Image 1: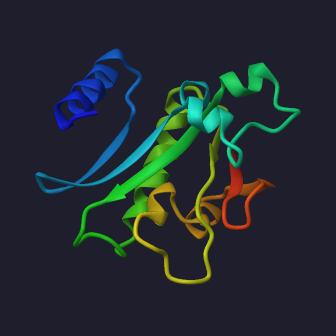
Image 2: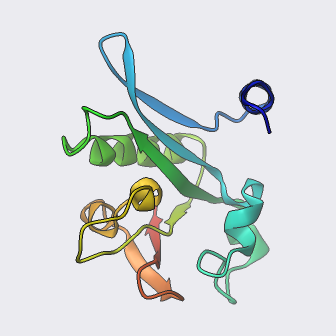
Amino acid sequence: MTRDERRDAFQQKVDGGPAPGLLAYRGDLAVGWIALGPRMQYLRFQLGKTTQPLPDDSEQALAATYAVTCFFIRIGHRKTGLMSVLLDAGIDHAKAQGAQQLDACPMESEKPLQWGEGFVGMADVFRRAGFVEIARRSPRRPLMRKLL
């Protein structure tokens, strides 16, 4: 997609609701983003090898599940704890929308990340927020869940 097509597609998603995520501001500057919403609306998350639901997850439970799929932190604002702030706000948002659980598949790494690897979040941040590992289908990507 071209830049304009991506912008227009995102605008359609925002206009159609529910909100595709939350923004964090410092003053008037948007410095961070968390993408989250109903799990069933994220087809790649639903079908992904590392992110697909557990075999015993019922349709009813999945209908009440939100997923955290992405973070973005503006350069100059990274390593300031903003990912934790965004995740806490995302948890509150999911609860307010009626979600009963929140899933994520963050990165777990003992070595410095390569460019772009951290966009799914860091497992330690999710653990500190009360998420527990429910499956591990990849050495570096635990599927995690928080009951709300």
